[in-house]
Length: 368
Image: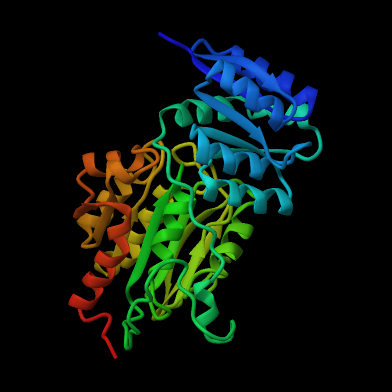
């Protein structure tokens, strides 16, 4: 079997050496080159034609994001970003995912050598996934946030390239939308949320992401969407017009408290190798919300959440699953379909419109 050929781009000789060693220990992977900056990497990519590159976020001679943007325009290829566990690292990584990077690995700011060794399986798994991923077109720059039209956020109304949905009036606070996603899911989830009106039912999200990144991700979405977006906090009430994202490294579920739903954020063992796990969230949706739940399974590797999504459907939920053609990785959606969890399978761009159509048909949302 042909090996997946990888070029490592990092300004640290230590990191280049460690990544090359980790990659070359795998029988199906080979590090064919290591470059200290993007200009050297450009020549190496041209000469070696690798299958995947790993790219440091902060690089000399040319910023890693500038290089990534040019690469995805001129020679699109799978890229796994290597980010630092800092607020700045999280912000840059999210922009890299917008530009078309498939995934990222978060290296510690201190103790990099030991940290990378502990992450060896994660690194090689993500390289394998990236080598088979469907590349997306880079997202346009989001310079006009939809949140500008949200009460208390600023004047005017933006759309981020989308036509504004009609204003919506009365709604039942009982309905809750549940979203599960992994590889490619940061952008897929954003596309769904951008199309939701300010008075949408509450949205609860588990996106596979490490600690330190979900807060920046939530803040980024909050600045773009008509609904409010934040990391979930344990015990807080689940409200319409709000989206709640599982904090990295913790499980998120929902519980009933009298007439209200509340978020439950807890530590625990990984489920399906993940923490947060979609399985945990969707299982709570089936148990607690039942027919008032609407499930969405987006792009991602593996099978996390598939069985619980079937439990949601058996409990009366309405479930939408992203189709293969629009997925970066058709793993979790495929498994959900195979489990009989999907009511409908749709391209990413049709999921939010179908969701709103379903809510209006049920009388949950009404035009004003």
